[in-house]
Image 1: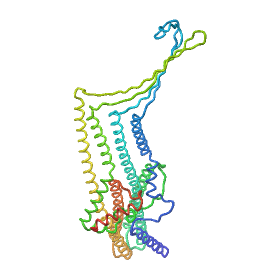
Image 2 (image 1 turned 90 degrees about the vertical axis):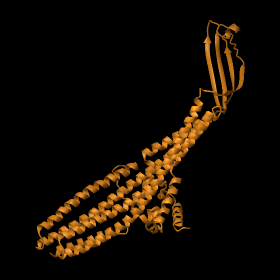
Image 3 (image 1 turned 60 degrees about the vertical axis):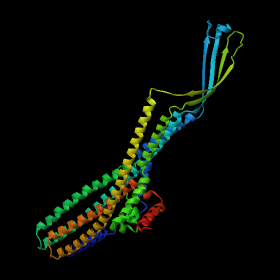
Image 4 (image 1 turned 180 degrees about the vertical axis):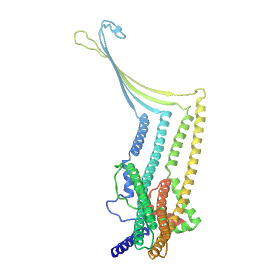
Amino acid sequence: MKHFNTSIEQKFLRILFLLTLAFSAEPAFGQNDSMLKFVDAVNQALEDNNGFAAQSASLEAKEKDVKIARANFLPSLGFQGSYYVAEGEKINDWDRMGLSSGTKGVLSGAIYQMIYNEQYFANHRIQKELYASQQEQFRNARYQLIASTGQAYIGVLVAEAVLDVMRIDQELTMTNLEAASYREEVGSTSEQEVLRWKTKLYKADQNIAGQKASVRVNRIALNQLRNQPEEKTEELERLIVEEDGFVFKSNLVDQVLLDESKAKILRDYLVEIGLGNSPLLGSMDAQIAAQERQLKSDKRWLIPSFDLMVGGDDQFMVVDAGDGESQSGDLFWFAGAKMSWNVFRGGSNISTVKQQKIVSQELQFQRAEVNSSQEKAIRSQASMLIADLKNVRLAKEQANVAGRNYIMVYDAYLLGEVTVLALLDAQEQKFIADYSSVVAYYTFLLDLLSLEEMIGYFPFLEPQEKEAQIIAELERRIAGE
């Protein structure tokens, strides 16, 4: 019996150690050089993700369209030539020369320079604006990839954290099963109590098996985004709100949580950042600029276009007269200007201008809708994060209370002062509280990542000085300075 009591004592000490981990200030672990850091995972996705690489190539192709449109402003040089042989017949100019056989060739060259062509100028400007729009769309795709990678990374963290909670619950169940078996041996309880703990242990084993699969699924998703082998396993750096909480790590965050007027200042500030840095709005602005340039071009349908051309034409002839002699023609130079003036096309010009005006108005309405939707989304997400942070603190306190309650009930159970049902209930309460604390913590981080995507600012990819400036400005506004 002495050996068994020693085992019970060791189990209880291990429980205390596990509870200490569960009650730690934040779910953070020691870091080492072998860990995959959050920012490294994101950068790896930006460098190696195949879909993002394809979008980058598409952007480069769009840039070539701008250069192609610009080529119309540069001089162009062309040559043209022909060569043929005549035998036994007089053809074309040879009739005048009395030649019946020989060879003839024509070589011409010309330099062409566009002076003014409204269509060319408009097309170049439109291509530039469309390229700018695609740049903004590419920036939006970059933000989406960053957010997706971050979500997958946090998905692994939360799955592992839940798995740790399940393992702690499994350890507690194994210890309680051992204690119930001992109590049965000494006749202080029945076999039914032992069977209760065995049933709970089977359930715990099933939960752990399922959660391990969840960890693997999230790791596969993270590896795919980073273009890494699907089964690759790495230890991940834990995220800490005090270090990774962006504006919510401000010294004045408690005022935001308690004072709605301060919370509104925070929301207004985030909206200001987000709308000023929105790739969707930037893309819409570029599209509107392209449309306005097209409308301006259509309004200029009465303005003529001018072209200038300079060239030369050399007609040469070689005659096979049997004496080895040859003849050649003279070089002919020419220069000229061309004016194109489209005066009337059956009223289509006026209709086109009206149509382009309608398209411009449509784009303006769309931009206003996007602006309103983004502002609403940012304000809603900021409100959600304030609630999340409150929930994190409450869930942590609840987990601490449930842990202390479990220890008290466990001590009473060993002394026979409470029934197994009380201990089962205390353990279940502790498991639910620990689970809720983990979910609340990582829900906040996931919602924060979504907010950072909305405002187009990821502090972990920016210099710390810039993040410090943003937080300092927020604190200045909250303080009413």
